Length: 186
Image 1 (cartoon, rainbow, N blue to C red):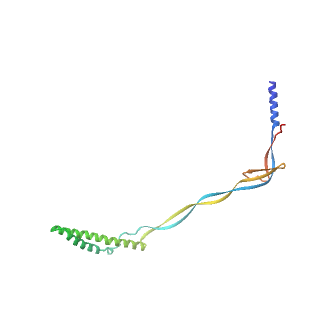
Image 2 (cartoon, rainbow, N blue to C red):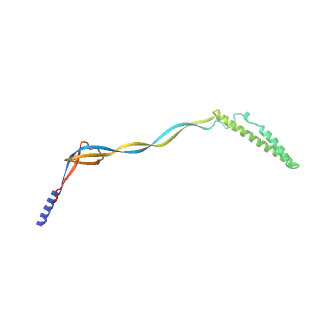
Image 3 (cartoon, rainbow, N blue to C red):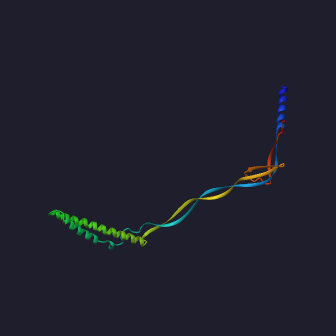
């Protein structure tokens, strides 16, 4: 037991003499900032207003004078002549009547659909369409170049020796250092 206590005291003394660590201050000779360039994305948006037609004020002519009947008359006559060419006896009469009706309908539709298109164009040209303003927004990604400090290359001196290190922050005029002293074993 006595030998165990002596061995413990000897080991503790040996470890204590092995290394001594303490803090001190070193003189900073220079601290040069280190930079990096980065691209930072951002959205750049612009807005503008557009006028667009929403609907007509009225899809039909305002009075009956705009409706044309010439197409129905010409179509009816042409249909009657063609219908009369077909069939015999009473079938010829029925074909004539059917030709007049179909020709009148076709002629009316042809003439008044063209007139409706012209009317629609006049309505738009005369401003009879309602318009509404609508905001249109367009966005695009723009990359801004920015420079930022990543850290400092620090040159310092401790007891006549020159050292360098990289640090996140500027240490100022002095730099705390940890000094470790160990005896040299022969």
